[in-house]
Image 1 (cartoon, helix red, strand yellow):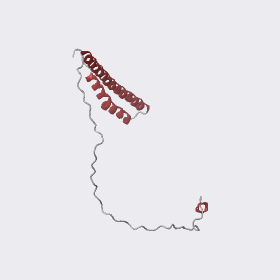
Image 2: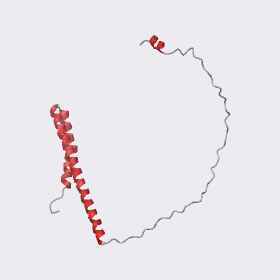
Image 3: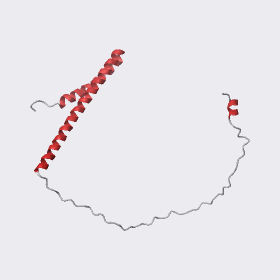
Image 4: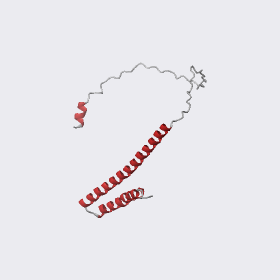
Length: 138
């Protein structure tokens, strides 16, 4: 569009009249900062904390509690092992994907990237997994 077309598309604002509102200026009131008064209130209700007396656990409850602790420890150990194995699996999948990509477009840079990934990611994860396994009889 040309400037002439743009100016003809906009309404004429030159002949518009400006209407002024009847606004009066209000003088500013100067006040000095006031100090806050301390307010003291009396509590309307008294809240008492209930006291609990320790209850002696029976041997059945102790066995159940120790069984729960043992089950939670086993689940936590299982989760740690699975998370380490999952992390190792994802690292190996990434190394495999990099190997496929470096074979699709062979270059020295792609090969160095694959080697660096394997040395800095896969090898430490394999070493950590190997070290964390329990040895038989120990």
